[in-house]
Image 1 (cartoon, rainbow, N blue to C red):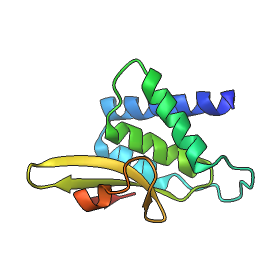
Image 2 (image 1 turned 90 degrees about the horizontal axis):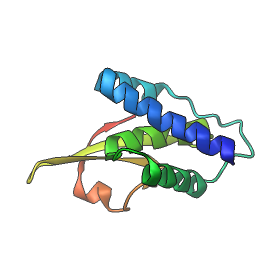
Image 3 (image 1 turned 90 degrees about the vertical axis):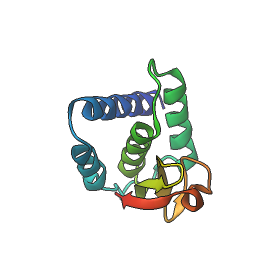
Image 4 (image 1 turned 45 degrees about the vertical axis):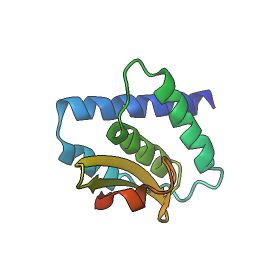
Length: 124
C-alpha cells in the first residue's frame, strides 16, 4: 500500500511539472494515451484509489486544482485497470470551467451532479 501511495504521489508531481513546463495539449495526450491495464485481476478499488488521491491532495505542499487532480486521478485509475476518463466542462454564466473523472459515465472524483452543472467540452 505504501508503494501505491508513493507511486500516486509521483503521478501528481509529474502532472504538476507537465502543467508548469509544457502545454495543455501534452497533458491531454498523456491522459488520453494512458492505457488501462485490464489484465490486473487484483486491482485496487476505485474508492481506495480516490481516497489515496484525496490524502495526497490534503498533504501536498501546494494547492492542487481540479485539472491537476483530475489528470492525476485518471492516470492512476487507468494504470490500475479502470477505464477512467478525464472530463473538462464549462459553464457559460458566470463563465467557469471544471475537471473531473468518470468511469462508465459515473462521476468518481467529484459530486455526481457535475454533468448537470457543466457542458462537457473534452473527454480523454
